[in-house]
Length: 263
Image (cartoon, rainbow, N blue to C red; front, side, top):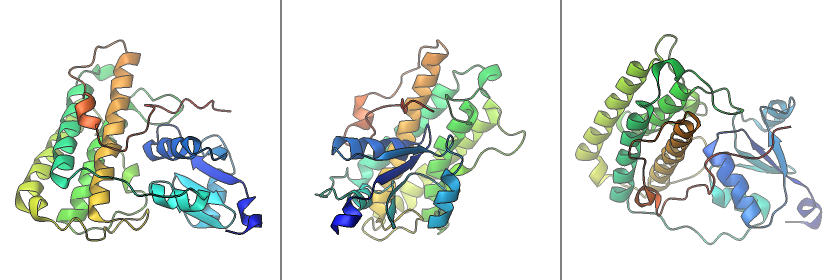
């Protein structure tokens, strides 16, 4: 990296409630790397700047003409000039068991939210509690599309929301039950013997299948932590929320929600 490039400010594009955005910013902060924080929901020019890079989603870290998707921390490290020493991952069977526990917790916790309040929105983010829960199930569903149907994980796949009129509690929970059934069927038929060292076909970078499964697991797990937060906001005691044993060994963000002041 040349001295002139090194002097270029680092830009971190993010939005509230985005799990990988929070993890990317915490990674930069933990390594003492200053950056310009750009909330794309609050900065009118942010999406136009991202469009110039050919991307439509966050997180993105940028330094001059160099940029990377913030979902892959080794790529963030390269752009930011942080030494990368690799990362340990739980074995695939453990990741699968954690993912099942997380998906089950999502259904259990969402069921506690009163029907009349499921369409209320998260802080500083245009996403309802029903959409958040649907998103948790959709993360696992996107994994299944990749592994069972052979579909590429395209940019925008994680932005799916329930169709109009299909966002009531019963329908979202029914979707979750279907995904969990399909997840178990996948594991029993091909998941146990899959080649987790092969490259995954995903939009956000060059990762292998093991890394993609890890991300599927911690990504949905972080959103379940947000569901616990929502229940606390509603004054409802969570029903058997996931304990530390569910998250230990996963590269979770430190915080549950991005507390950065929105300007």
